[in-house]
Image 1 (cartoon, rainbow, N blue to C red):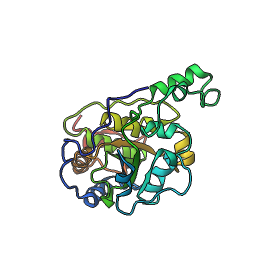
Image 2 (image 1 turned 135 degrees about the horizontal axis):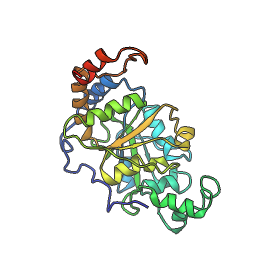
Image 3 (image 1 turned 180 degrees about the horizontal axis):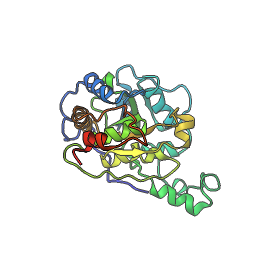
Image 4 (image 1 turned 90 degrees about the vertical axis):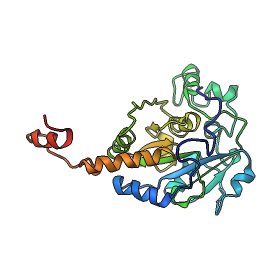
Length: 272
C-alpha cells in the first residue's frame, strides 16, 4: 500500500494557495480552451465532522453510496456534498480517503479475490499498490463545484475530460517549467490513481476510471480523470492560452490521413 506521511495540508504554502481565487473566472478560462462537458469540482478532507457540516449549503447523503457516486453527484448535478465513512458502502472507498482503516482484513484484498483477481496473493498485491490517505487524521470529506468557492481552497481539483482535452490540458501544464508526468494504474479501484494519489503526493494524477466509476459514478466511456492541487490550474490555463495563440486548440481539427503533411507540420511544429 502506497502512503505518504500525510496528505498535502489544506491551504498549504503552495503557489496561490493563500490568495483568494476567482473560481468562476478560472473555470470560465478552462472551459474557453477545453469546452469541458462535466463540471470541475473540488475535494477537501476535514479533521472533524463539524468542520465539514459548516460548509455553506452542504448536503448530506440520505442513502449508502460509493465515493464514486458522491463525486458524480457533485460534478454531474452540481451539488455540494459531505460524507463520513458511515455514508460509504464497504471498506474500499473509505480506506482510499483515509476515512476508514487500512487494516489486515482490508490489506488482504479477500473481498476481491476470485472476482477481480485470480487469488488472494494477487488481490493483496493490488491493495498494497494503491495510493491511499493514511487513516486516523480525517473524519469527513466534501466535494463541491469549483465555481461555488465553498471549499476555498479545496485540497484537490477533479477534472473529467476526453483524451483530446486531457492531452491539451497536460500540454498546458508542461508549457513552462517542463516536467515529464508519470502515473500508474492499479486497475480496479482507480480512484486510488486519481484522488488517492493527488491527496497523498500533492502531484497531478491521471487515471483511467475503473468499472466501478463508470457503473456507479456515471463516468462516460470516453472520459479520463485528472486530480491535482488547485495551484496547478492557473499554470495550466496560462499554458493553454499560449498553445491557443500558436493555433494548438481544442477541438483538434483532423488534417487527413493521406494529405501532404508539409503545410500542417510547418504550422504546428515549425519549418521542417
